[in-house]
Length: 133
Image 1 (cartoon, one colour):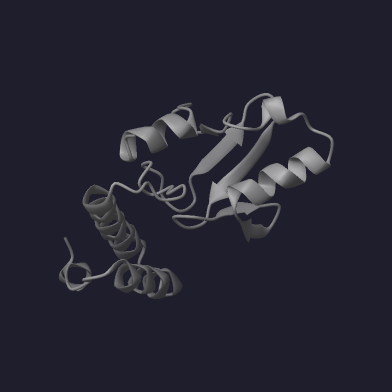
Image 2 (spheres, rainbow, N blue to C red):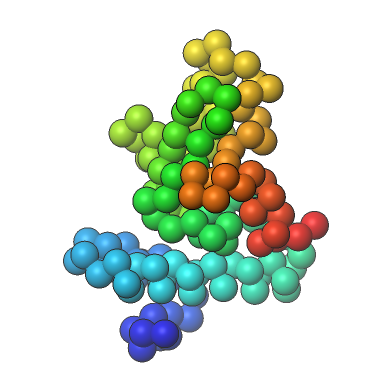
């Protein structure tokens, strides 16, 4: 691990480092800092037993990876550990789902249907593996 990343003691430290490294084009440090943040979040889960909200990085995704809804040809890009880039805006998955439903798309083709583009794995399965019940 990069010595700069090793100095991160909190999740916030890691996220600030990742953001600054992204601005400087240091993707290697971005990925390591995000991975360290995942480790810290998972340690918190092990200590408390409380599962966090969706965490794309803990699911094995990196910024820029894609998730999609197979039945309706909708795609979003991982923007951070919690946010996605959809139609040019960084937002949360639940906001995207509400928007799609408001457009008249059926909930049955949206809720719990997201898949990881590179592996075709169901996103919820990856989350459950990262944070078992």
